[in-house]
Length: 117
Image (cartoon, rainbow, N blue to C red; front, side, top):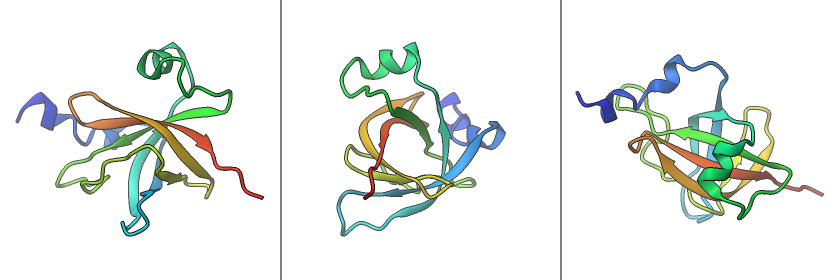
């Protein structure tokens, strides 16, 4: 086992994990349920990943874990700009930017809460 495969299901040992649904922007694609995610605070690290582009006062980064065969998370889905996240509380978020990190084991998605009227 390599380090890259060893960290695919690190989410099983993290505190603060929530289960979200990833809904692709492409309406013919099926939403992915049971995705393991970690909500992060905006900080200098977020700025270093995304730069100044797209960072709004209400932007929140979510880390989405790829998972492994024994602990699936994204089930092969790749989050893209324009996709939607529905968090554990049922709040909808628009993915503004994505960045793959840590040897392909997770994606950081910069999100903005979806406005509902």
